[in-house]
Image (cartoon, rainbow, N blue to C red; front, side):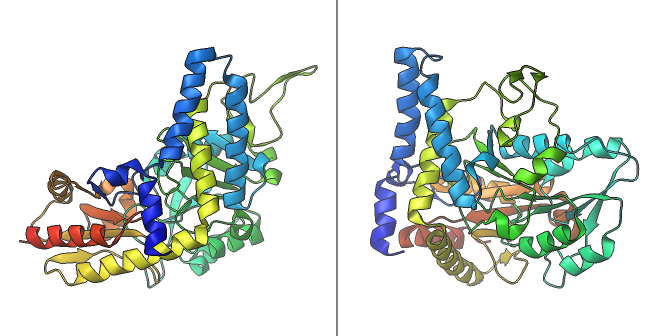
Length: 393
């Protein structure tokens, strides 16, 4: 991706014109003006014609978004559902997998997202056990260790692909191959993957995958996507139903035979119109090109951080994503984030709750997090590194 191409993206993004350097794309990225326009246009239509009356046009936009999401994930459009957040999407699918029985086993990576672990407490209360798959020497989830844990009681394998507290890229495809070989349901939390790295649900062999819209896809807050493998739908019995997810037929209320069984009749057409535009922009840009640019930018930043005394990087794995976890000696991570914010430089900061088992295993109370996007240019990098050098103890 050339500097000219990056500048074009920045010119189309209002947040890049504000003087703020944004390195918190893993928290929420910056939407384009076209994405904002799509949201506003639907809102204006609802205000002008009536919210319900504008629903027909809104429903068309939702289906455009569904097709765009399918294209990005290499999935049929019918296998995509939309939700209000990644956590709610994952929880809906997880709860639909029950009922849980005493002795059921759920196998997860050490880096599992805290929100998913919280949802699993429903299963734990029913007598199921959540067990951690050991890591390999690099700190990634180990497929060989997983293989040795498999027995008839394993009801789910769940993987947080790119953990929130660093640049690790877990071996999602290799884990999927183990799950497929043993016929065990496999869920992937791809909240930090979709829009950052290529995601092919066919190659991953996953049954369920979710991601938020506000992160690397650059969609609005309050949106998320959920992929459900078509042949796996029969194993999912959602507790939440209405006349959209379970339409009335001559035989009563029957669940839809596609992923829309996880949706309801009430949705924000405006937000989904914005998400659809963001997904279309990502497809037009090309996810491989995006990933190459993120890799180049994040490696430059990592190299710059290594030159600053007092900075400790917390990378795991053999290849890293665009999430850069670090600490600066003498600084609390959240206070560092605040101080940089005063200088109009946005970064993230995570506590133990985000990835509790991994943070505890590594003795980390908190980490500061830089997360990059193709929107970031050389000037952004220089401002960030200069500010950190000035703050070192």
